[in-house]
Image: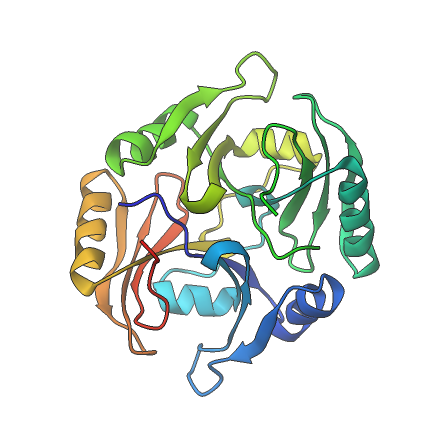
Length: 140
Length: 140
């Protein structure tokens, strides 16, 4: 297996609500919802850096597609880290997320490992961490 | 917010077990567990393509760090997509995962959208989809 993640898919309850949050609120690029012609096919992809994609897919569709039971939302299953180039940019992204309707979980603050970070939850309860880490700065 | 995911962190129950699965079973590159000097600091990072990192972090530590309640494992919260360059490579990765101790959830097969894919669960129940999609081939 090559060290590669192509698509990070997060389970959502209402595809329209989640799409609006990421597209309109956070400004992430997407062609919107596609695949409506298929049962359990509706999905929205966002193009991230270097060919990585974020996908929004209903939890019920994940269950159907993977042939598992649908399970309850559970915030401690994953966190999605968005690293930025400065503490001020952490504050800016946190503010943008909250303005878009995110729940502020942990205000941005100094971290135990020497960085600066905060957490918010998206409309489906997934934890996003906005991070300034001098040892892991974004390329762009 | 720029369209970027830097670190995809998945919650685990036993960091050693999960590390062995991804490092020894799947062959993903890592420096192993770091951060043991901090309470709730132990974490393992894997370097993926283009500076993207996969992190294994105990569910209890996610709860502590984000200041949320720890919640139950829930497979329909996310899926992690690993795209490959051929159907044969899907089969090979699925076999490698199962040999490493993954649970075979859905054997690789043709998909409704015209691709070829299968699902396995890692030791913590997270769903991984190994995908051959002619419209989204890996660069390497």
